[in-house]
Length: 247
Image 1 (tube, one colour):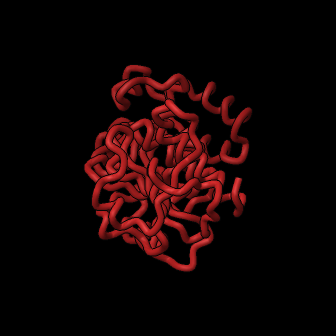
Image 2: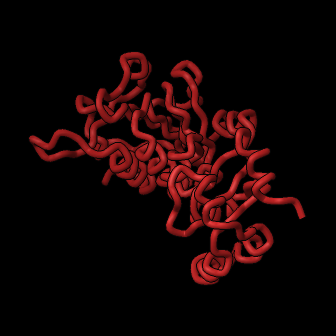
C-alpha cells in the first residue's frame, strides 16, 4: 500500500483541499475524484459517517487512512474538529464553462463581482448548491477554489459549476444586478436563465458590471440599515427566484 503521506505531498499542489468530514462527504456525493483521504481518528470518522452520511459510508471506509495527528495537522491550515482531510481532482475548466454557457438553463448563475472575503464566497457557493443554481462565477482576484473558500462551501463546489471569469466572459442570459438604487425585487419575477450579480462586501458593484446590467434590483431593507451580508443577499435573491413570483 502506498504511503498516504507520500501521495499527499505528491498531489497537494495540483488538487483541491477538502478540509473536514463534511467537505469530503459532499464532494463524494457529487462525484468528486478523491485520490487520497486521511484522518487522525478513523473509527470516529466512520462513526460520524454512520450517523450523518450512510450513503457514502462505504466509500469513506475505502478511502480513509489513519495517520498520526501531527501528520494530519501538517496537511491543513488549521485542524478541523473532525480531523479529516482529503485531496480531490478539480473539475475541468472546460467542463464548467460548458455548463455555464449551456442554454436554456433551468436555474440562474450567481456572479460575485470582485468579492473580498473568502468565507463569504464559500457560503455563497454552499447556498447556490443548495438551491440548485447552475453555477457561481467570481470576477476579480479571489480564487473561488482557494482552500478557505472550499472550507466555507463545505465541499459543495462539486455540486455546481464554480469558475473565475472577467465581466466580458459572463454566461449568457439577462443580467440582474443587485443595487440599492434598483427596483424592488418583490415586483420582479426572475427567469430561470437569469445571471444574478452581487457587488463586493465593501464597494458594491463595479462600474463595469453595473453598466452591463440589464436590470438593477434592490432588496427590501429597513431605513438606516446599511446593508446585508453578501451570503444573506444571495440567499434572499435565490429564495425569491425559487418561488417564481413576487414575495
